[in-house]
Image 1 (cartoon, rainbow, N blue to C red):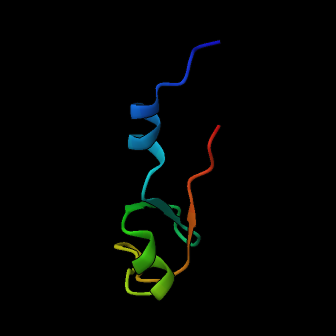
Image 2 (cartoon, rainbow, N blue to C red):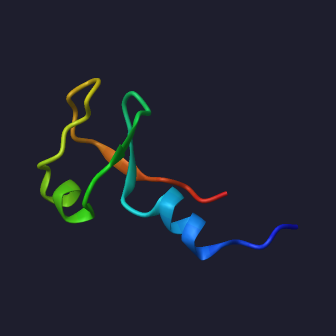
Length: 54
């Protein structure tokens, strides 16, 4: 089993959100996501979730 590199983990999972409707990835500030200021580029919705770590 490979060791997890902290720098790589941050690049992959920090500030990355997935649209619940069209499943596209968006990198944004979590504060703006909570406030509802960020919209999806594809479907223009505001429903996001965080990336699930494997």
